[in-house]
Image (cartoon, rainbow, N blue to C red; front, side):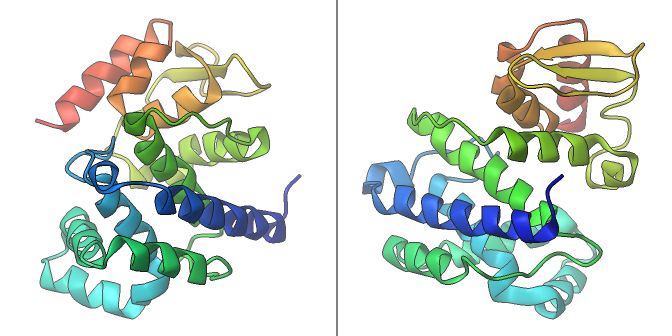
Amino acid sequence: METPADIWNWIHDERLGLADLLESLDDEQWRTPSLCQGWTVREVAGHLLTGPNVGTFKFMLMFARNRGDFDATVDKLAHQMATRPPEQIVTDLRAIADNHWTPPGSGPESPYTDLLVHGQDIRRPLGIQRELPPEGLRLILTKSIEPRKRSVFPKGRFDNLRFEATDLDWTGGPPEGDLLKGPAESLMMAIWGRRPALDELEGPGVEVLRNRLDAESR
């Protein structure tokens, strides 16, 4: 069983690895639309700097100025951070490798999830393959669908859905739920609303989740 110290070590490695990847990109790749709707690779990278650089107090001030609109606040901060030159974003990501900021009430699994999901938001459109660590995937899958995490997602997204990874020993959701089955990375991306990952899964739950994601975006 992983400890918080283990997860912080994973975060350190993920930040440095992602910084190395970003450093290798050309201008066109930085401008590529990511899987995170409305953001390019550059804006996703900017978002990953937000928490440690802005902090909770400044975030809450901007949240209030945006009349309690969380998504608008996150979007504005990502765009602000993305105005930094690419080489500065890389430097700043390396500089926060050991930063232990978390959203209020969250543990290190929150920034770790952000790194793995958004890392794939960057890699997938660029055609860059990476085998994600199974222990990290198992942690994220488990934490993402647990009841206390449901407030992060639109209400009802996971109701009566069951998830089963085909490449590691993990299942989640009620046994009688509509099944989504496939690679753990694809499950993670689908759970976090990335529609292309649904095409990599099978089972009756795939269309159920697809329809729910479509309804959320209307």
